[in-house]
Length: 280
Image 1 (tube, helix red, strand yellow):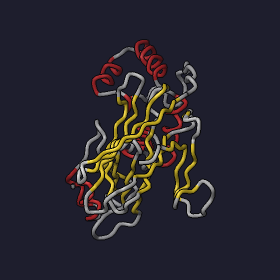
Image 2 (tube, rainbow, N blue to C red):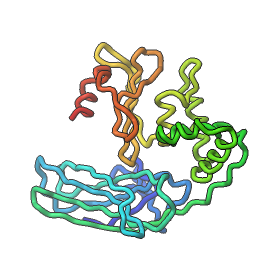
Image 3 (tube, rainbow, N blue to C red):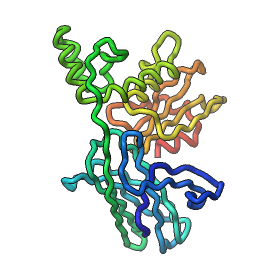
Image 4 (tube, rainbow, N blue to C red):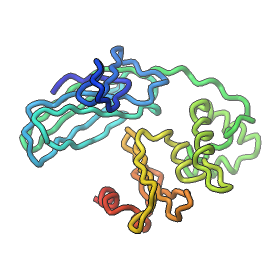
């Protein structure tokens, strides 16, 4: 297994420039310092001496803090197609506190009963958010998506002065300058009739989790299925929305996100290939 190459960007590129590896354009981050404009951490590495067969290699990606605790752990499986395989992976780090970390990759081949592990240090650095004091700011009171039911009921029960105090403390812990543009984007792109965009299913998910890292779209429905959007985040979260009525009103029907609900009775609106993908 090769050393790990941390990158600020990995994209498909067949131009053959000096930053390309195969059909990928890899932009290294030599200082391993991820700042506020870096939404994702990317890693590139190679696995050697693979015995190609029908089995799979299990890869565990971990971000380890200074207390040796895993703040993020994601498992992926790789097909054993070639004796040497190049692997790239991205993980969203927006919600991870600024600190020094270790990025760890563990590779397991159960067929041969062998494993390998590589680690590389990195740091996250962000400018402290500006204090928010203007209660008139757009979306200042729209905090429901960031609270659980009990917390939001408590907030709703407060008198006006209590709500002002609660909101001030809330925005001291959350970055208004980062979250408010999500509301603006949701309203501009996901509105349904008179319904504000941030109150739709796609808008809610966009506000809570930020822009998806990948979107698969099927924009034309047929007798078998309706138009859908499959949002994927590098932290492993996924969401599938379907335009059931053909009116551009997309409903969340499947997700693996805690706190969000899937609707199995609506899976039949998806193409059979997509149904098999989420039901396996």
